[in-house]
Length: 227
Image (cartoon, rainbow, N blue to C red; front, side, top):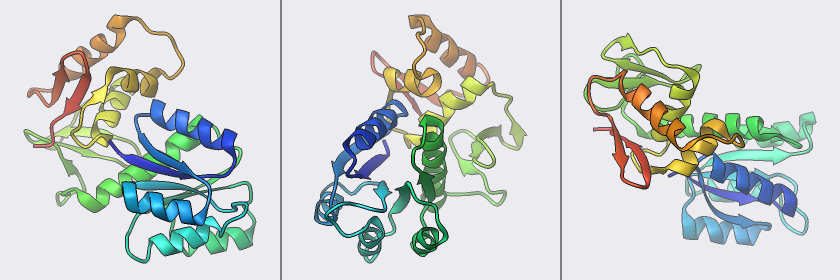
């Protein structure tokens, strides 16, 4: 599961962001409010992505924190700020963040930024074939731009919106098990669904594959095979 550090001194914003990230299937390692806390938490928990407020009270700025962290790492940074003036954007751009969220932002804004950051991380670490596709198992591949597509050899597999979201959260987990509740929140968010809805979606999705690339982990969730 992808690990997220939140650096944000507005308590309500931080907790709302944490809640949404968990529902989207991410692990939030910590919420911190200062330069010192951010460096300590980063060193201890090694997050994959940092959601960083630019202007922090009683602390150096988020840009200063990002500069320090990037001296010895290449961690993905997503900046958050209520300001989008040219001066702020120019300073932030020098850090080369994966995304920039303007407050107030909603769930879809956060989800889009996290998807962009996740895909960029995968580009760094996963093997890509000559056509820019990422390898799954049994001659299955996927591409991520402009949205998730899955292929068997060179043939694209036709997917519905929910099937695509189902595969998307499994791929983002990098082969780890994703719990049923996390999948339900990711696809349907705050909608009430029956117990059979996710099972039906899983069976419908797997019926489109000739090989078993999605594994059910009894009473826990699902995972996708990368080899």
